[in-house]
Length: 436
Ligand SMILES: *Cc1c(COP(=O)(O)O)cnc(C)c1O
Image (cartoon, rainbow, N blue to C red):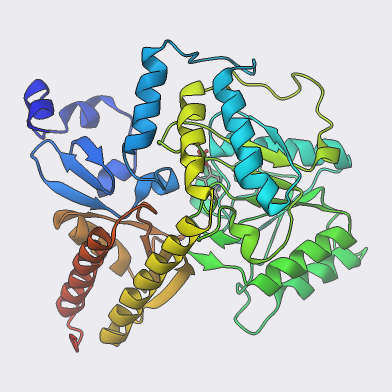
């Protein structure tokens, strides 16, 4: 690290970013420092201050920063002049990825999908899924859910809930219909019967959708979890009305909730699955879209993209799949998830005045607060060396999302900083604290 710092600008001014870079940037406002190095669950800034990462690149760094095995494979590949860019041409790196994905992920789960490389981002995968669903069914409408997040291009925005992000489109977002997610209408209301009444009724004003797109757990939308029953019911509804079911597993996939796919807890088999973020393993851009073979009605070149063949990502993606060769990693994630659960529950109980609500599953959990508490926590945590983001329409949820590979010491240390911050903010808010 010392070496890196000496080689570069050690000063921590942010002048070039403030002066030259667009106002559109956002995360750097929550974490205003200049980062230089990272390893595992830790980041360092140019002043040598260390941060514990409870953000994990918004889910792109499930295996941590600069994973040693992936780095080794990557360096070896680069040194040997391996193919870097290949559009959709066949390469050895892609062959290894496809073979491992089939043998380690698909076969043991008895999943029969064809794999499409839609371009390197999550929204590329979502766009390809929406296009394919419309092409296959000949219908136009896509049903999506309240508080959904599917990406920032027009098609993905049209199925995204957030008003601010939708307004950014600058044009009407249509051919989509938003329905209440599980729990949206209150804990005792089953929104599925509401949805079914729309599908059933020729007077509902809603034409039969081509597809339903759903996240099994809404990360960006505020850590809202759909119950197994609700997801199974949704899959049944789709089957009954011959609507394609798309699961957007861009953030919840690759083990975030425990299993490789987030829908494994339900037993449902989506028609189309979107994966990105951590599929590349090393934080390198990569996305795939899985589709049932009978849906693969694409004409060659009908969906295209220059950066569909990021072979450096294929190399690290293939290496990352080793984590999934047995159930050990899932058990590890579940154990850490439990540790997070206990810590968050303890916090919420200790400061009842803040009215916190623990949400989530696996290593995607958080606490929903009222007012702007979550943003205050994030800001204070940053000062104390913890990177933790907020989510939800009004940034009302503090979102705990460490690399899945974080060790117990790192996890405990991060949770300690988090709880101290929350207690201190509670005190600041004149709340009575029954500190444990
Ligand atoms: C991040 C995300 C996307 C968009 O991915 P990008 O790579 O940012 O385009 C889509 N869906 C979900 C659920 C996401 O979390």
